[in-house]
Length: 319
Image (cartoon, rainbow, N blue to C red; front, side, top):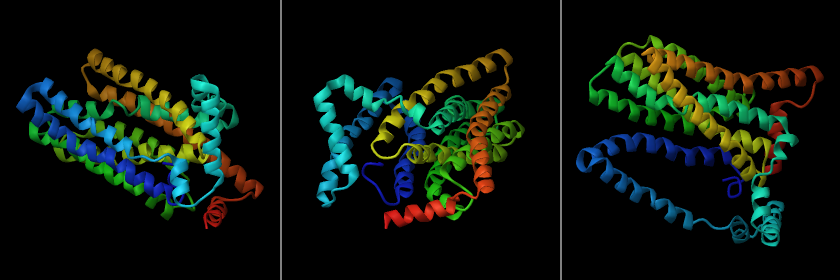
């Protein structure tokens, strides 16, 4: 996205990520319908055919350098992309891997390490297993009929869409107080608090409210992640940043859900699993928020450029 979209990137990113929330809304009832009609093997075959459409979508992408040429632009980004391609041709696959996984990013900016650790705890450990365990706990608590409980997954998707598309609006309306990094950390903290509060949900209405809040918050922090990385490593280096960031999320995903499941197996209570998720969410959010407020405090004491001034400078450059 960063290579194709230069102006209003936050809005374009939110619209693209809204597709993920749409999938969460549409696919759970569709999957259940397919399982009832064709069994789980037949359902997987149909889902494979649906996912195969990604090959069609991918084939429609133009090279970013061609995209720039079509608009008659000869920007520094275009030159950098061409140079990268020449380097890849000259040095082969090992050099390509090195460029796409430039570990020097960890040294160049400590903020990148902070973002990776926040994602590891807040998303990898603290969120990846939550949607599944949210539905499972609703079934154990018997907060509603099977049809009502299955609708919780769709409600999660609907609120996730709203959270994703609200990111540029929130950042615009609260630009005086919020950066993408602060919004990322705050929503992770709020999700951790929501996990703790969710243990009080005993009725279908209260459980639905928790699901909607969870979907909205997750929609925000899953979408704003790209903006955080773009602010730290912009341009073509964003690809390398995403490549290095993603394993932290994946590793956390290997740890969080099994640990939460083990806690339930040992204690027989999903509330304890959600306490575990809540702690992880709080840790991830605080890792992101505390350095941001320390940095802001230093700026205020030293009288350095504030966020509004930075935004005005960026808007001036875009014009």
